[in-house]
Amino acid sequence: MSYTNLNISDPFPTISHSLSQNPDHVINEEHITNLHVINQDNINDNNFFIDYIKIGSINIRQAFNNKLNDIINYFVEHNFDILGLAETSLFGDQSNTIINKHKHPTLPNNFIYIIHDNSGANKGTGVAIMITDKMEKHLHHTEFSEGRIINLIFGFKKSKQLNVTCCYLPSSPKNDVTKTKISAACVEKLNKLIIKSNNTKNSYAIVIGDFNVTTKNKSDPNYPSIRLLKNNGYKDMIKYHQESLDNNFTHSTNRIDYHYGNRNLLEQSIHSYTQSIPQSFFNTDHKIVITLLEKTFFDSRNKDLFEKFMNVLPFNKRNDEVKKVFKYDRMTVELWSSYTNRSRSTFKYRFSKEPQEINNNNTLNRQWDLFEKCLIELKEHIIPQKSINFNTSSNLDLPLELRQMNNHVILLYQVKQFLNLKHIKIRFKLYFTPTLSTLHNIPRHVWATYYEGWMKYLPRLKILLDFNKLSITLPSTVTPDNFVSKNK
Image: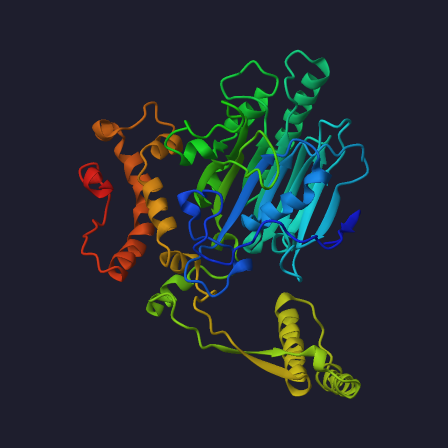
């Protein structure tokens, strides 16, 4: 897509933080679900990797320009795909969203994009979202409001949308008339974005950022934003995935930074957690909130390949596939001339001899297929080619389910979350919190509907058990009677 106000930054100075290429390296006490995890951008023939979309949000406490290099280094080293920034202190630009294109600090052909909302009125405003160049290719829409809210919509095949909104609500608005009005304007803007998402089929929406309010302070002018999200079925991702909130404060002893996801996004989430920013990067008194999503769901590749590739275990089996690619840089003036002349004669023979009237989809598709076939034949006949052998220690073409098995962590964690009884309460709005002693109080139709999902995990768990030569028998259904033994 084309951008206005697009700036490309100068190359980075030497990075002070060493970007380890060791797949066993764990940065800054990453949560257990991040052990041995790196994104596809940094894969270097290692044996441990999990494909995911990593979304974070952090209040950087102003001084964006001074912290820029360190923020980008943090973004890269911690493998983010999307990172929301609150309180950038950039303001005063009412014209349009500003998109800055920064060179990747370690990969010369890669870029990092930062989309800013600088339309606030003072230094205490400013929000931005950082994305990788791969995510930028899917960016379809940007929207912003008064340096407080920025919304990005990413489009994927099969009409799937990833809808990301980053917020920075005003601090201490209760006794400030101006800030109270800003809080109300933020609620109004969020409501419009939520309605738009709700009216969009296959919208996977997440609202992130610094809300400057705890969920218990319901008289605060910022709380209506939380209430709005809850009333529209959005769930607190930390509460959904964490068994306890004791270690998930994001500012001092309070939790004021949140990730709220709609029902669609919740089902594709792997985990959510909080984490401190190392002082070696930049100073802030907030913790970062992180959510991991299954990347394959948004991938254009077919998830049904799971069955097709069942026979490729073990997972580090080498792939001897050979693919031919066209080398346009080897084209000479003579070859381009030959290509031009041959294409003219070919198209004249195939399309001008008996022109067809295109008046329906079938005719159009036939003509397009013929045109595409002609182009391929022309290219294969004239353009130089090179054979590439995709020998790698891990097959990147395998679907996420298979690649995760090599690490096991995510699959086991997902099963643990699936068996978490509080998710039944959240999903079906039960009036009580189920425990092991109250299993039989859960209505039968609720139990049966929820645990139909067991069949999604059972085949994958059996493969994992076989791969590790473990003789554990898994039941075909989950019932209140075998639930306790299954959890063990």
